Amino acid sequence: MKMRRWISVLGVLLLGGFMSVATASQTNIADGVGLKPDVSITLKTGIGEEGMYFQGVGGKIDGRINPQIKVPEGAVVQLTLINGDGAMHDVAIPELNVKSDQVVGRDSSSVFVFRASEVGEFAYFCTIPGHRAAGMEGKLIIGDSQASDETGTVDDISRDPADVPDPIGERGPKTVSVEMQTVEKQARLADGTSYRYWTFDGQVPGPLLRVREGDTVDLTLSNAKDSTMIHSVDFHAVTGPGGGATVLQVPPGAEKSLSFKAIKPGLYVYHCATPMVAHHIANGMYGMILVEPEGGLPPVDHEFYVMQGEIYTTQAYGQHGELSFDVRKLLDEKPEYYVFNGAVGALTDQHPLTAKVGETVRIYFGVGGPNATSSFHVIGEMFDKAYAWGGTTSAPAEHVQTISVPPGGATIVDFELEVPGKYVLVDHALSRMERGLAGFLKVEGEDVPEIYNPGGG
Image (cartoon, rainbow, N blue to C red):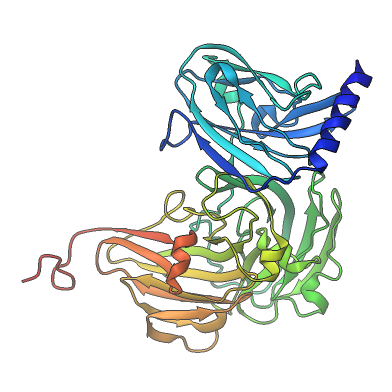
């Protein structure tokens, strides 16, 4: 039996080698067109000792061969097929009249959406001749009460902008212990779309670290066992070779340590500095460290943490499914996505900033990049104070409309909220909004017609 399967597999591989088929992801929309999926399922093709197979990606089906998939009755189901071996494949559920496009070439993908309107058990399989016999067949069960526990879910990668450590205030220098872990994970990039991120502590950006001028930082960096890459960290706040990255190149499953003194106050970026450095940064490996000056910064009512980045995918912006990294677009500096805090909608749908009229807010803003400069602007507001380039000891500029922040740079902006409403955070290179770059600051309170009167008069 095993020999017959391998004969079939060999024949398909030879056939696939002579075919020229586009490898970009295609989307077929069946019943459920225009609806947001209730369940997202990802299957990846593979070849092993027992022949060909589908492998589950995400949730409790993660890693399972030809997994049994359970979905609730009536759910809108999005199924993504990823080519993991380079041969030509598809996936179909004939009894439900749904089928993916054919995918050829490693990492190509296809997505289709359907409504699970009929209760029962249904076979899903590859329709390419010989593939079903070679092992590519599983079972879909519609109407199971435990369906939500079985199907793959996509994590929210974006860090809440309100995740900011408390101000340090008045205290002397001390030793601060910091532990960070590099984590690679599949997560939501946009609705219906996921990406394999590389992160610090599992979110983008990495944690905002907060120390005082003169503090000694004892840093331990670990790399998760299931990582595929060596990772590191370069702190722009470190005075020393590589910002610490020369001694913090950490293989999967290992950890390394560094001690440094924060001798100069300011807001500084940190990022992975393992070659190719731009690749690691583009995949989400950036964050910031605030070194407060002696006595701290002037108090405000709310502090927020926002970073801008770029993501370079083989697939075009807006395409559904599991997207893959494109090195050529990175080198050409042509990202498909611009994002605040890691993902499209991170600061509009997932974690909008919130405050009230009469309160003051401070935004710690940085650009991970790795390539594009940001013209940071809040539509409908002015920055009462803007600390250019993240410096905290120079006098801030006042009443600033837009501030330029380079890749690997930062700024601090303070402003008071006089009028209620929804304010939009943007990069004033405004075409980037069409590629995902926007955030909301929602301000509650009573109208102030003497300042802003929509009705006029």
